Image (tube, rainbow, N blue to C red; front, side, top):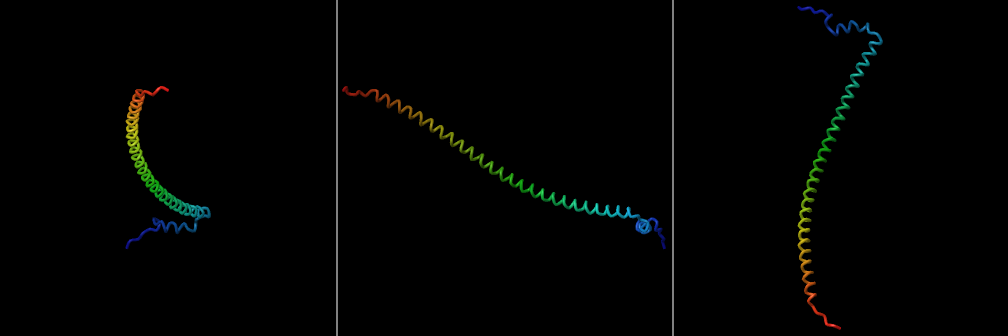
Length: 118
C-alpha cells in the first residue's frame, strides 16, 4: 500500500484553511468569481458583436459587388451612347456639307435668272 501526504493535495490544503479564511478573503474570492462571470459575459457579448459585424460586412460586400456590376453596365452603356453620338455627329457634318453645297448651287442657279423689267 502506498500512503500519500495530504499536505500536497490542493483540496486538503483548502479544506484545512477553510475555517481560517477571513471575511475579506471570502469577498475577494466572490469578486474574482464575479469577475470571471463578467468577463465570460463580455466575451459572449463581444463574440455576438463580432458575428453581427461579420454579417453586416458580408451584406455590405454583396451590395458593393452589386454596385460595381451596375457601374460597369452603366459605363458600357455610356461608351455605346458616346459611339452612337460620334456617328450621329459625323452624319450631321456630312449632311451640313451636302446642304451647304446645295444652297450654293441654288444661289448660283438663281443668279442666272433674269427677271422682267417692270
